[in-house]
Structures are given as structure tokens and as C-alpha cells.
Image 1 (cartoon, rainbow, N blue to C red):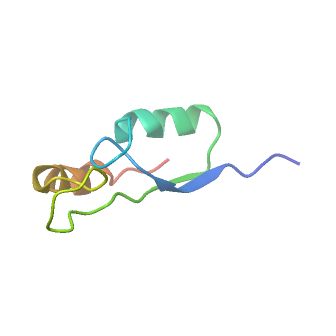
Image 2 (image 1 turned 90 degrees about the horizontal axis):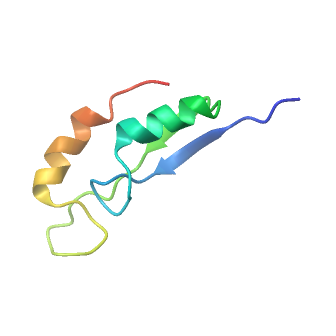
Length: 68
């Protein structure tokens, strides 16, 4: 039986992750993932090291409307 590869909690460069969403999508496909969900930390309205800056929040939404 093949393993079911999936990740529903993925962070990108738009908050506290290290990679671009499109790079993570390509890597997930190459490794046989059947699903990949992005769950970025939205901007809470105050400065933090883990959340999206307002300008990144605007970029994040359309960037992550991809399918495996």
C-alpha cells in the first residue's frame, strides 16, 4: 500500500516560512503528494515575527489558488 502524502498546514515566505508557494507545490508534486494546504498567519494588526505584513497578505491570497 502506498503512503498517503498530504500536508494541510504549510507556511510560505509570506509569513514565517522559508519557501515560495510555487516552489513548495512543485516539490509536493514531485514527491507524490495528493494535497497541500497553505495556512499562513494573517496580519494581526501589530508587529510580530511570525505574521504576514499587510503587503504580503495582499500577495498571499491570489498566489495560493493552485491545485496539485
